[in-house]
Length: 358
Image 1: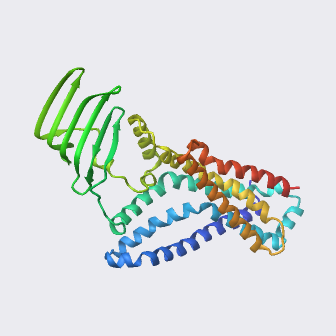
Image 2: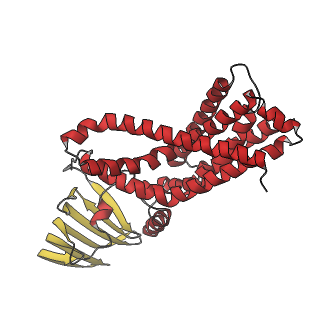
Image 3: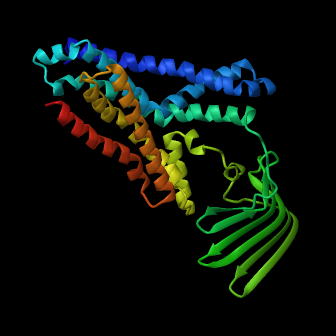
């Protein structure tokens, strides 16, 4: 049951947090609009599309800097309470420091739950719309004729293309290989392949098909050949930040599909999958640290507390980036990588709590 003091602290906590989100959203929009205004004018982007873009831009940027917002919110209003001697009055009334942290935990739980839902469903959908806008109006479209890429489309099937044009859905110097163990049992080569969206097949031109069965080999040459493969045009386009555009169920399905194909480079997707759950839990850790630090009067007042808060928030974000990079480049498991900052800052929260609650 919440008493008046709990409601007072909770109201200040959530109110300050929401105010910071609103204020920073305005600043972020102004900065981003200033940077892109020339592109908007040059490409004659409709105002309605620009408004939709910024509506989807806000969730992306706010989630990115979430640790800073919650930390600054806690420190700002707690420091003001300390400077006005309100905390001294609360603790003098018989309420313990541990009990005083209850509304902070409740506030952190509300924010954490909201971010959890946003990370899994809201932000990916917003990112999808935002990135489509950027791809249509802001990104330069350059399709190289020397892509030279290999793709594993299943556990025993591989394709190669010298280049691929997404607009015409056409690949050039196409090659397909099917293996059994370490031996090639089927190989197809074609001058070009074009996807037929209606039939759901690839149309091969000047196709040479070889079937290898032990010492026996059959050769078939056709000017045109329609064939179904285990890949579609969407699988050939490397979309920037594709993992950010998928909701968690979609991301999980994608990871499982790639595992079935035998793909090895999935760490970035696994990191994104686990990060969506670990990130919201930082609200609890950062709220406790912020409340403990700002509850003591210091020379310099709120300014000093805010400086310390920004520094600790920056360290948290840096640690998150460092651990995820280590997981991608090194051998650190993605699940461990995304939880390392929460674990280390959790230990820091316990130490600071014990020190300040005495």
